[in-house]
Image (cartoon, rainbow, N blue to C red; front, side):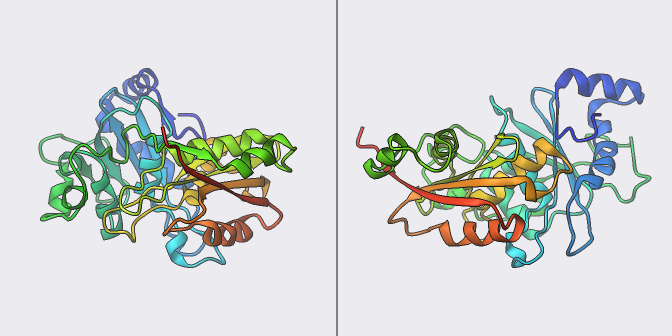
Length: 303
């Protein structure tokens, strides 16, 4: 596995498994053990990693992220990272199995409910670092429904046809006329960055507040990383767009510092009931104080 490879193609996963004399499913605990080194938990010093196997044979990795100087609720859990990482890759396959280095907390058990068919996703937690290569489908994995019985989730609040967190979204957002004029007249930030944030907002999963939003980050090399706001039916486990963009950044650059983020744009509705501008500004000031930040407003198209 490449040093900072947060997504492994099916063919590479198969080859790696064979090199260890294992099946791909049995490979997951080994990947989790290695991936913990990629976690960023400077507050708790408790690294967590998760690896998910999808229906098309790909493996996606997630780790926990903590941010000194910010309240703890800004943290990203490994399972949230995993789901966000999965959402960045299209087409998004069905998540079937997850191996995580520590038992999922209540926060993560609830966040996973936003995936269609969540109760049937199979989870395995190795007992210790030596519990490798012993995954057996029948007795080692337990469904999410075992970890969160009698769940509260999207089925309680949404119509069954509403797209869930790993499904295609189009929130039909367009920039306001004033923002379009700013772009035409030479916006101080890259128009590409604004459009990337708009794209992220259009893919945002916000069916409960109806306040989609997206963040795009630019690093010192001009590369762009997008993050979409993702809500939970229980509200508190929701993942903010800045944190989602940070996931995209870490998944792409591995160990590079956040101080390489030099510009950011948030796109959201001006009169949104749930607004992200204050918390995104606070987040960016903590992780990259010199980052240039702009808020761009949008509205729902009348089409």
